[in-house]
Image (spheres, rainbow, N blue to C red):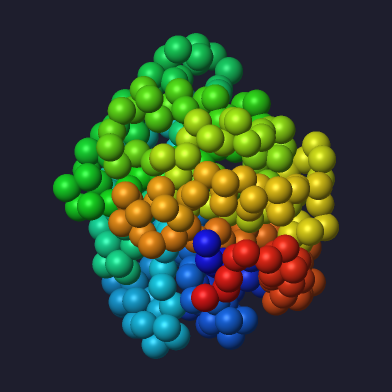
Length: 285
């Protein structure tokens, strides 16, 4: 396993654009990066020249982009047909942009339950949309990575619902991105995680208060990060991930939340890195 970095923390701290964030990640010693398409690296944020500049900068810095975080522009579970068409076009553009950066996995979220839409209808709407996105991505050799969110208003909010969505979508390029802090908030353990072992393509480090999603410095919250890393080793995750075309799993730091003050983003990253490295068994590069 290797340690990676999601670019969003510098955007949250100081509105840094994606190129400035990539430079900060490289300066801190990272090789692997996740690009945050929701905050500053989405198709809506970058002109053609900007997209080419991101690619050139990653090459110049020696960075390997591994994952692209990109959500639909509307809530999939309650969006109208017209809104879903907008979302589909946006995600198609995002998949093509990811490929131009040599990224072969795009992370998305299935959406949230919405008052006035039945649970059956919401679930079915999300399944159909994700199937359509997967069908666009598959011939381009791109995986669509589902991440669960820990709160009850998300359709996919634990391992059980992750497994159900994976089965209902039923596409070979539909895979799983696990967030260690989300596992903790959902009170998931080894037996739960084992059920998804062959679908995991990527992971995030996050840490939180016991009952609140806070994305604080790793090691300062209640997430048992070391225990989850041990679980991934017991699952032989680096061996399993080879079927998806990678040598080993990358686990990237996800730090910060909109509206939360981050006085020194680099310090947050350094302290998180120090904590994870003290646990042993996972390398920066």
